[in-house]
Image (cartoon, rainbow, N blue to C red; front, side, top):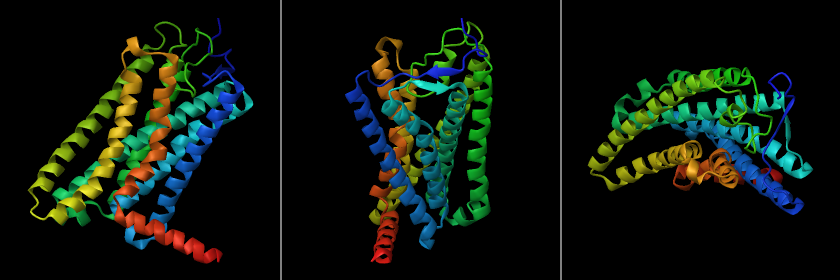
Length: 311
């Protein structure tokens, strides 16, 4: 039986067996990747170029767009290459790198969404203290804390996971390298150390979830007491996109990892993992742009500038 020292590559789960379906999946991944790249790229450029968007909320949104671009770039290009060249292989080092960067970027995104909930809480519940509590230095520190926490969390899990002896072959039941699937290949009882680390991370994630929920309970209490309908509309227009992104992020991730074994199958695993790893980075720019007039105006201004430049 192979162990971690003799495994030089892993075999990922293929989306399809026929060549036509493989090319269809390649085209689907390419379309989604280009949409995510364009959407997040527009948000990054619009925020960077428009002075009116140099506020804490848009600073955190800029960081979110960077994390979304990073997370989808960790997974999709390799899946596209495998579909195009009809292969399932990924090197041992490539698998470890994919696990590290995906856990790093997804973890940092969750911590950043928690920071963004705090930003909305201060903006709506304590508007007079917004400038003092969320100055430029404080925003940079909070964003750095989110990125740093994601990095440390990923380093812990990647080191633990890939130091385990592997006794169950090298076939990963997923279209990308994922910690739960790698643990299935480890020797019996050897994975308990990583399970302990996962319990710690889940507890931390639950703490962030409670913070987000409590923040929004306070936000909705304040918003519903507002006498001005215009004030309520403005508050909801800045909160609902964030709440939608958090809901999409958590619901797909929780269902993917906590669904009952009775409804589990390889096809469902592929669909659910696709929903939580690929769809949110492509959809988040659309969610934030639909109700945000300032962002839409900045994107239109950017398009007009680009058109005038090329005339």
